Amino acid sequence: MLVIVPTLDARAARAQSPAAPQPGRFEVAIGSLWTGHQALGSNDANETTSAGGSLTLFSTSSDLASAAGLEGRVGVRLRRRLEADVEASYARPPLRIAISNDFESAAPATATETIRQFTIGAGVVWYPPYRVRRGSRVAPFAMAGGGYLRQLHESAILLETGRFYQFGGGVKYLLASRPTRPLKGLGARLDVRALVRSKGIAFDGGHYTSPAIGASLFVRF
Amino acid sequence: MRRSLALALVAAMVFGSVQPALAYLKFGVTVGGAQMTLKWAQTPVRYFVTDQGVSGVSATDLQAAAGRAFATWQAVPTASIAYQFAGFTAAAPGRDDGLSTLGFRSRPELDRVLAATSFVVDAATGTLVESDIFFNSAFPWSVAPAGEANRYDFESIALHEIGHLSGLGHSALGETELREGGGRRVLGAEAVMFPIAFVAGSIAGRTLKADDIAGISDLYPDGDFNQALGSISGRVTKDGQPIFGAHVVAFDVARGSVVGTFSLNAQGDFSAGGLSPGPHVLRVEPIDDADVESFFEAARTVDVDFRVGFIDRIVVVPRGGDSGEITLRVVRK
Ligand SMILES: [Zn+2]
Image (cartoon, rainbow over all chains, first blue to last red; front, side, top):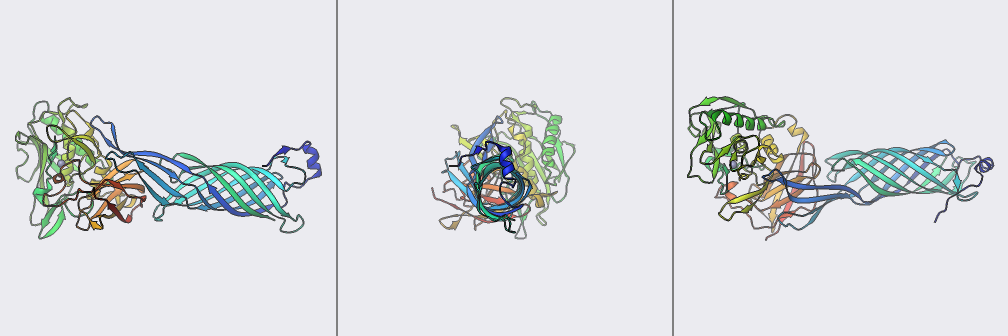
């Protein structure tokens, strides 16, 4: 468990430690991104009744299953506690359509395919003026960003495009620090995010949120 | 042909057979041993209206309601067919005079036929020369904007028959139940081209559905039909053997629309065009909501001995292309 406590005297701490939360101006990272299940909505196959109403032939409910993928990121420190990132990710989440409630009592079924999902985006990372303890290698941060989403169906014959937004927080842990050398640091990052995807594979074009966990290794220059 | 209570007979029997184009049911004609799709070579299709009305529907009412139904088909943006009212005529529909005519005729002996469409085809060339639609005046009719209880909505029935006049056969996108006195009652339909009409008083049949739009566009493609939309194709098998006459329904999960087709040859092949790009769910079912003869010639052996089922993969329709071969395996009842 990680406990974050505010420093007793931030001004004094800054005076004693004028350096940024972690050394280096540039950061390059690669790791994995696990994205949780994402509901995509429901839709019924309807027929029209003589009164102009609906008769449901069958119902469907769609979702994108959880999946682990790859994520890469390049960051640059803009200010002492602020970084800007560009990032890209790739994953292959299964798309599932559960079919039920058939008018003629067909057995419930699930139709599936595997989507290839690419994202490219940008964001900011902010290090709050708190520290776990003086001299700690752990730097907590908050993050927010967004970008473009491309989802390619299994047969590679149709591309869906959309957007994503994400916000969350995490920690970076410095495994090695060499402030005077060109390669200034090596570390690990762990974060938890809320990932909002819109359009793309979402059948109604709506916004759908799912949890995501990122884990990566980074180097600093 | 539109039946009030079912027991349908498909007009294709009269004029040849269902065209083996593997997409929707179209009328076909055999010329010199070769199958040709029955369709109008030139548009606008000129039509006349008989100058005789019936109780509640004057000749002018008939012309206006038929005009609305023609306009509904003509308004399909992805289809090129057009129609033109050529005038009133004293001639009744059904006369081989080279003029396509719509009008009432009293046929009380056809106690389940609301209306029917007939064709005159040049046997040497396969060219469609004339198509007449008769509306059976033995039934009560209405052209009231909101419909009238116990009277059949003329515009709805005309819309169905004009689909035939344009070359479309029947769609199986409907659910029915047997009536105690015989025939079937429609519980729901998602195609104007379903062979059985809604109950008297209903005006639900005045609007074309995705299935009708795909069918007419497949027959008379226009605009960006071929570029913007896509198709599915494949075959239906049971115990490893292809089956004929299985009803395949494609559900567009994003748009909520359904389009139906059939396996239409000895290899069990099916296809459907005019589908919106995106993921689809495919359902396959036996023809069990109308008589098989509503869709196919009586001589064809249609397999109805299998369970309703779904394919376990999502079928993706590409933009301007085909899904690629899909195999739908059905299980004996
Ligand atoms: Zn009909």
